[in-house]
Amino acid sequence: MIKSLTIPCKASSFYFKKVEGPHALRSRKVRMELTITQPDDWHLHLRDGVLLEAVAPNSARHFKRAIVMPNLKPPITTTAAAVAYQESILKALPADSDFTPLMTLYLTDTTSPNEIKLARKSGIVFAVKLYPAGATTNSQDGVTDLFGKCLPVLEEMVQHNMPLLVHGEVTDPEVDVFDREKVFINTILRPLVEKLPQLKVVMEHITTLDAVRFVESCTEGYIAATVTPQHLLLNRNALFQGGLQPHNYCLPVLKREIHRQAIVSAVTSGSKRFFLGTDSAPHERQRKECPCGCAGIYNAPVALSLYTKVFEEANALDKLEAFTSFNGPDFYGLPRNKSKIKLIKTPWKVPESYAFASGEIIPMFAGQTLEWLPSIVA
Ligand SMILES: NC(=O)N[C@@H](CC(=O)O)C(=O)O
Ligand SMILES: [Zn+2]
Ligand SMILES: [Zn+2]
Image 1 (spheres, rainbow, N blue to C red):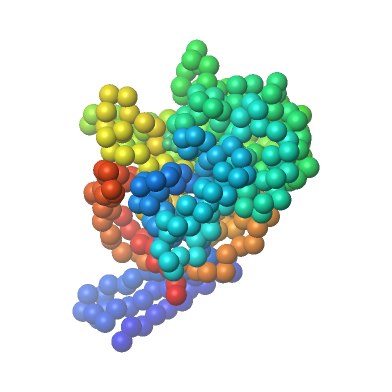
Image 2: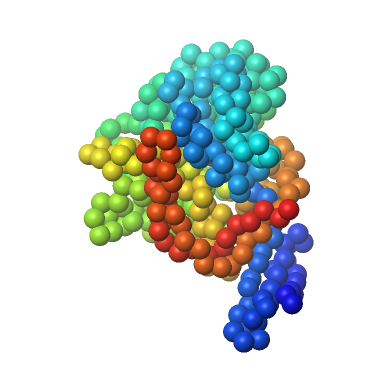
């Protein structure tokens, strides 16, 4: 017989469940379980074609909704393209999946204010993404001069309460790659927030103490940030440990340990300004393990285990659910999910790779053993 014990914690909808298995008396093993509201992923790359078919089910297994990045080739610059992309994502999901892709538009120098009206009216577009031209994967069609070219669009976004999602790095080759986020905050973000204080902005995948301080200094409800598992768990040593590690390479690049610690403190503090965004960014193995490898870490299958590990190690498991499942929908003005997910503290091995039609994808922490196995509560 399985005995279970529920221990209430500080947060009301959160509890520990200790389950004593059938061999409990002999082995004295106690299994820990955590049940939380099902999370959403507020920053996800689903790609298209065979890659989309390979990765979409893995995100849909754990997450209820996701903000889907528009940096395809060609990019999703119109509402019509977003509608078509959403249809292909839905087709790539298992028949019984209730995963909802929340679509975004890719901002360019020529995006028209009318496109924002169409986007809002569609009911399927939830944000507009700013890629400074040349900053990251498939950003060549991005913005070259935000204040010179995009102010009318940004003003229209304020009218429609449409958030701007930001890849926050400058592209000036003279600026050290480790300083590009900090320089972006000082030269673009701070002036933007001063010019348009009513614009909702999400600083995506923050990597520095500077970003934490900036977000905390702004008005709550207008400026927020997503945080990835890799920037919570790894510092820049992970790029070179025992040789060059292409599967730990993403943009913004991993930073020093003091920055990692600042981000961990921010998310585990219980602040509403930070929420889950995996930035899961799959690239085919050959495109990562080559002389000029792509930036992007595929973390969708391991993300929830890793976030839970971070909160456990910070003694902040009671703050996990707000970060994974409340702060994101609250910021976007969307309802919180009703469904639940269980995280079971049991060892499980991350697959070495995920095969797909024309190759394979190597996940973050491939082949390693993690704890906290997610499982949807039926
Ligand atoms: N994060 C990454 O390193 N890569 C992302 C783009 C991005 O989010 O900047 C990708 O699309 O591959
Ligand atoms: Zn980015
Ligand atoms: Zn991304």
